[in-house]
Image (cartoon, rainbow, N blue to C red; front, side, top):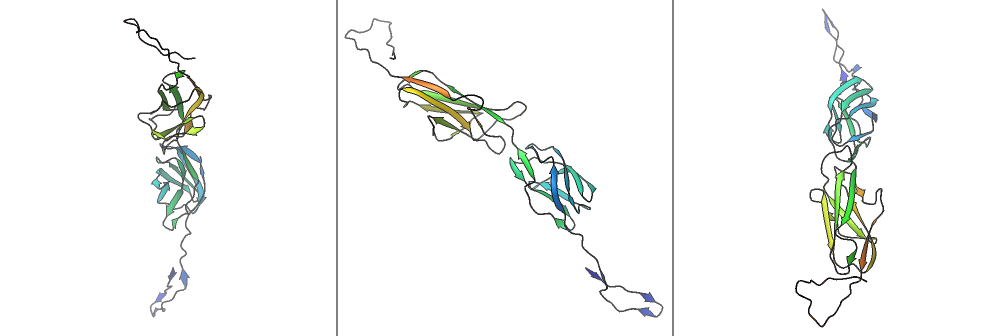
Length: 232
């Protein structure tokens, strides 16, 4: 803002004025962050490049304060990322002059997962209950237990998502017609873990359902002999 320039002598001082103007430094700008992505757990060392960083009082990534903030120069800041949610995050530097505009310069990546599917029986007799189990785990190098839902697909038709419990989802059906059925499971991911499919790295699980036949007899079965179902 403006300031008055006053000179004082034994005879007095001049009148107030607005002859000098103090210029407010412009707000910071952020051009790039390196690296541009990191894990959701945080802890990634980053360097932010931009302008007008002198006197910076804060840095947030995804709205969360970064740690180990160091103003290296008017154009460079180093810091450590906080924990965040999977997806793009805004990198914002704050100085006494204000903050830069919101952006999507940083990306939090969720750990990869592996989804596997198994069947209670294969082949099955028509009418026999089929139980499919999907197991979702974190890929090598990751930690934690995925949450969220799994969608089971049979012959290209997706069912209602099933909630994971301790990394496992179960689907049952007894209405499959005779024939060969293509079955898969898709983990839909959540804010902490990436989506994955049982098709990743392998083909669909093929379930064979065979027709049941009935054997009629006029005589009771001998004692101790149980009736069994046979397929054609």
